[in-house]
Length: 469
Figure 1: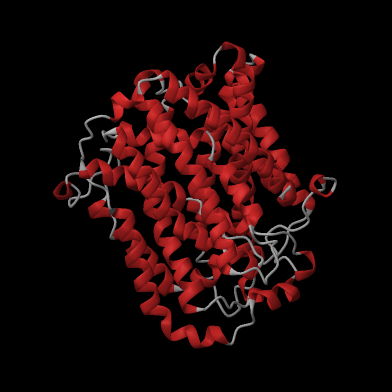
Figure 2: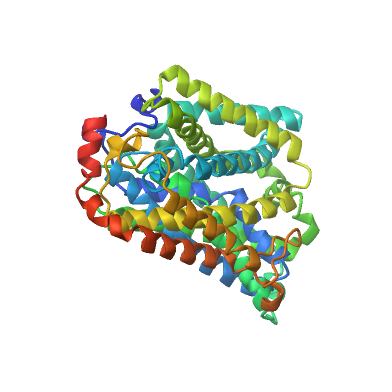
């Protein structure tokens, strides 16, 4: 445990082979814990909120996570092969400076998720300590930042503890929900609504897709000999099982409680346990949310650092720089949480939909480049050099990315805020995420496949990591 309490040495620089350690099964507990928490339950509630029958909402939850978990877990396999954080690898696709565009959007994503996590975690802390909610949010954010500063080892250790806690809590709450409420009545007479089903499917798939920018951050210390299959399945199993369970719980809770759940998520869940368990359940909610909140700060600081170092040519950060970056991310996230905690559920659904339009094209391009264009082979030295093999800008990748965003617009249905002209023809269903995955990925492959020969001459991720470390 002593090693876990030391400040992590690496930041955005490659992890050399001598520092690689661990087994991919730790990814199962980490991603199970990251998903088995209250925000997942809130996302499950959204599938009923959009008008879908609860029974079909459960189907949408499982199917959406199963589909969205595939690209998410494929990103995980990039970590052991390259030994670098997820988003800095985007420089190989977009260019060292060109990668700043998706990076800025990812920073917004991290801040948004961190803010939403602070709202729910802060509610739990306030319930335990009876401190004002804004003070509780600030304290929760500060503790999150502290763990992110210590870094990778402590995050994985905490993920294991949080997984065990999550199972105990959600088993208990699930039994209380099913035994104490008339769940059978709300699941009766299921009426299928295709547009609502597709919207619920997009919401749950987007939950998994938005983990894409995180996932290699948590696998990059694994030995480079770790197989793609092993990394994929341990990650996929943890993220899909954890999210599906928590979201199904949230969907059923909203179906039986309605307004008693909406806007009062923490109070309702705690109420299921009865008065004697209020404090233990509040503590479990706060700790359960904590894992993914730490990942938001951890990935957020590396994305900010990757953005700024694109112009400074730095490949590593000092300990002081690490603390400063994390402090900035934590303060911004806490501020957003305090200012935006009013209509949380509606803000969160809009936030998820907004992210989906921008992250799916990035995910498609990143995965096609790794698996089909460069065949897992990269020159990591060039990733840190604007004058290197990947250059400052890759116009072809940026074109594919822009088209990937644009082709989604006609199919978009952002909760009535924006509706594309083709969405009404589909009954209001939002299938833009499917378009955003297929079109830019195919276009990028067509534009870049001629360069695959050059990529085969690049050094492997393992060899480059040893040089760059």
